[in-house]
Image (cartoon, rainbow, N blue to C red; front, side):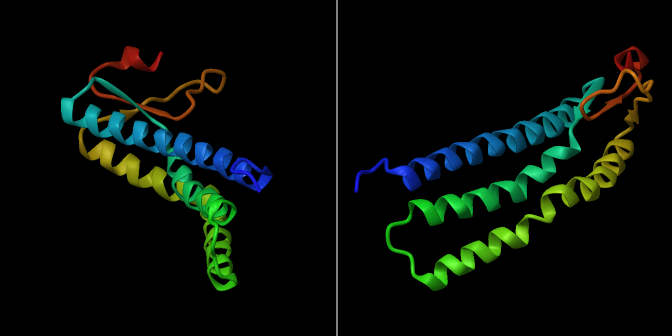
Length: 135
């Protein structure tokens, strides 16, 4: 059995996906917190990045099962139960995060840009005293 047999290779690919999703979450946090701290005129917010948090847990548990050499059946079952418990949170957490983000942004004096249906941003853009940022 080599180091890069098929389950191990899939496990490493899943770990790379976890790292990528973790970077998405980290980038969104840094951009929002940094923008609020610096008082930027406009901030792009992607509430869908909140769904990446349970996705990292789910995919990470799959990678752990594939890469671990000595897991008991009980531990494998617990990891799979954790992963299946996190799956419903992937689409639901962005719905819960959007109102919270909106409340925080409006408390800080930002207004959400209203855009035409044909010109949507991938997330939400909030502006403060700069309506041209919405164009």
